[in-house]
Length: 250
Image (cartoon, rainbow, N blue to C red; front, top):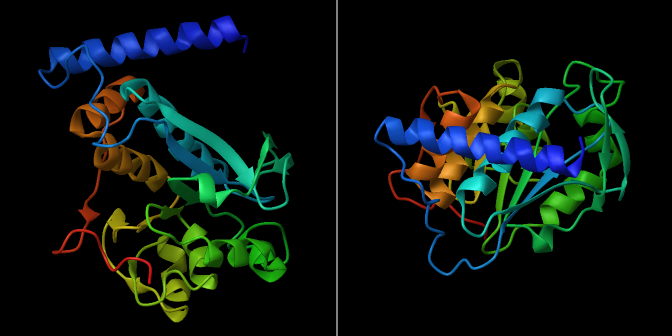
């Protein structure tokens, strides 16, 4: 798509999102206020690897792309790979250009999608776990101010990195036993928010992950605006701890 085409699409979506939400009495014409102290874009890194499930990565990418139109400071959204820039071939053959290498020190949110769970000998999460580079990078990533999230079987990669050990979490229904065996505390919910560790269920739950984190980071008006733009309403329940903030990185 050309730059002018991209700008035209953005203007159309923002216009329809604002108009639709305003008609429902939920959103004014101004974007949601940025959280206190944030004077720069919210930095979202979506991790890519061969065999990644298409909808696992594109759903949160779409949501955060739209969320950037509803935040004064915007969203710095990018695909990243531990192997550096290159082309990734997803589960159904989609080729995606990745322009950025791993750089979790400069992220506010790292999203790990799943893919290839049933293909032990093919590309996907098992190949990444066996290779070890992504789990090692994730294990070194936790710090104050960083949220690490997963969609679907991306939670298994987080568990392989030791990040799910003793933490409330969820994954695709077919991988729950594996997640529990790797130390995760299985918790019911479409999205499980344990503060700096946020996990989502299978495949389509990436939409809810994005919408929930949009609400958490930018406010309810922003999330409603994105829902209106996408013509999609979040479903299911988001689990949160009784004491907000979760266990936190030690």
